[in-house]
Length: 179
Image (cartoon, rainbow, N blue to C red; front, side, top):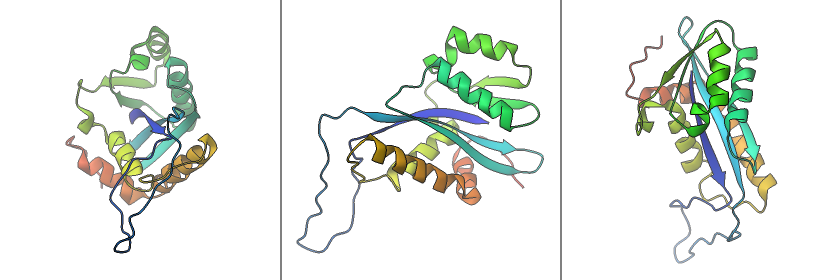
């Protein structure tokens, strides 16, 4: 299981788009608006059955801290059976005393830290890129609720496409064999 966090901002991520000749597309958005939707997600690989899944949680107008990381991992433990190999980076919330104490008590979790400055090893980074540069590109929300709804819709869309999830794993240089 790979885990990572990201933020989706009110300011749109601008990408090229199509328009009629001599009709420059215009994108209106609110400036100086620093609200965001924080997200935490996992890309899970079940080695026995070669199943790939994605689980996520959104936190509108909040940041990911140790308490939210622990809550997310507890939810994963309730949903998934058997031992879990958890791969993540060295985010401050991952290294927090609260998180390390929680993980020390969990028998089912084996923790693996990814190297510093190696986001290409984590397939969840490709999930964020896919979401932000795909469906969320050029999206200018009018308020935080619109951003939350669009983010949830985008991540659910990716979540329900196993081949798309497999492609996230395929882009990582880690050697994972899926049947």
